Amino acid sequence: MQERWRRRRIHNLMPRYFFDYRDDTGLWTDESGEELSNLEAAEKTALVALADAARDMALAGRQGSLSIQVRDGSGILLQGTMMLKTAANHRVVTMEAEQQANSLIRR
Image (tube, rainbow, N blue to C red):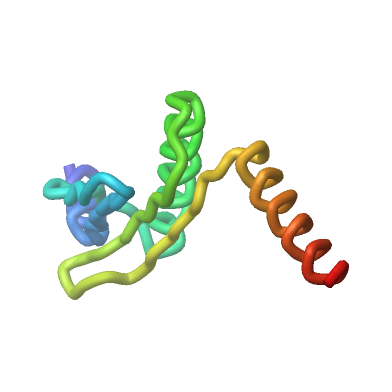
């Protein structure tokens, strides 16, 4: 009985972290949060969530930025941001930049 009470008490001491998402279309605020052992665990959870969201964006053929903010009751603790852009689009930009540079050199 005492062991069960002790586990419940420890469980209640775990901090609650909230994971808010923002992309090019809007903001999604986490209202329920998740109890995790510490900030390091919250950071790992945020990185996995960001990677999952990037995969979903890529599979949907979407490009753009996505960020996740980790907060607790005191405010924002961490923020991670990623930019998803296909290699084909990047190469076009690079080719345009090369063409512009070559035209400047020829002048």
